[in-house]
Amino acid sequence: MSPKVRNILLGLAGLLLLAVLVYQIPAVKSRLDWRIDVFQIYVKNVIDPVGPVPTALPVTPLSFTPTVAATNTTVAQSLPTVTAMATFPPLPAQASIKSPPYEKQTANNCGPATLSMALHLYGWEGEQSDISNLIKPVSGDRNVNPEELRYYVRTQAGWLNLEYRVGGSLELLKRLLASNYPVIVETVTSLNPADALGPTDDLWAAHYLLVTAYDDATQQFTVQDSYHGADLTISYEQLEKDWKPFNNVYLLMYFPQFEEEVKTLLGSDWDPNLNRQRVLSATEAVTTDPAADGYDWFNYGSNLVYFERYDEAASAYDKARELGLPKRMFRYQFGPFLAYFHSNRNEDLLTLASYALSVTDKSEEAWLWYGFGLYRQGDYPGALKAWQKADSINPNFYEDQARKAMQLVQ
Image 1: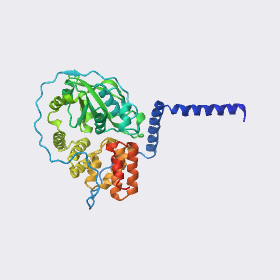
Image 2: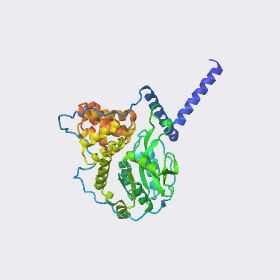
Image 3: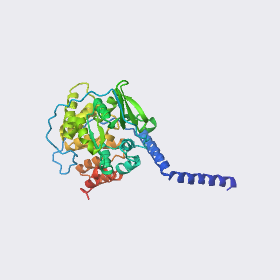
Image 4: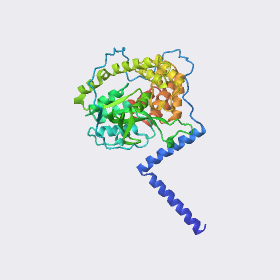
């Protein structure tokens, strides 16, 4: 071997060693891992593209009552009676809350980053990694539920309370802001094409925003957007449109000593059951309109699930799937899994969970429900593997539901 060739090989070896060492730097590794993951997903979907959300299968309920059932977190109750909404004084034409220090989200981390910014308004001194390390320890986990954000606040920032409700309105957002309460909302965003699943991706995704101001003169809210930037504005009309796919869910933090004020601001919506019954009635009314879209039917199904009316919910979700839903819908919302499981429609459960995993394989929720579908089918080894996968993605998931499920087959 000539000295020149030897020097070239030594130089390449040195560069490779340097690259390996640089890759071990946490900040570099997290960025590269994310890009590698996105690239792998893109290549996979070029070869085997993810199609549209599958429509419902012919209804063929099982002939037995299951002995194992995943439980909804809401206890079944008789439907409450919704009282008339309180009358509130006129709102000011504008209101604003001092913006928190801006925090740019790391990969797949809008929930923890948005919560971090909100917590800073209440004297918290941590950062998004403190939150994500607990509620989404795997960076490839692309979803954080409102329940998980509430869990973090209640267990790690116990000097604060966090509540979330559905069916929020623009008026409610303004009322809360005018009373100096920032609000987190879950909305739709359009992904950067660099994050596409493949060449036919719809680039639809969920995104949390921290709302800190409004102005009736411009018809705009000011939001802190962990992905796009600080103090951005969004029109009332656009926020209302982007909010709808998530049942207009909103999250509100407050000091316990101000709970009575918060109760007054929310009116009957302070009671979670009254809130859901009001929104259930509203979404049911919307679905009577022939122009109702997939989101309208999906929201109706989710509100039925809350009251454990699973057969009706499954039918509502069937209609939503027929009308069309974005590919990533089941990365963020899991009511259909509950509805199909509890209405004994196991094939639909497996089909939809499998589809969700083809879009996002690091979804502890989809793996959990896929495991329940396999368990009901009698595939106990397959169920165990699915639950082990869920546990590996998030061992803290819903107080460790995956490990509880694994006890069924161990």
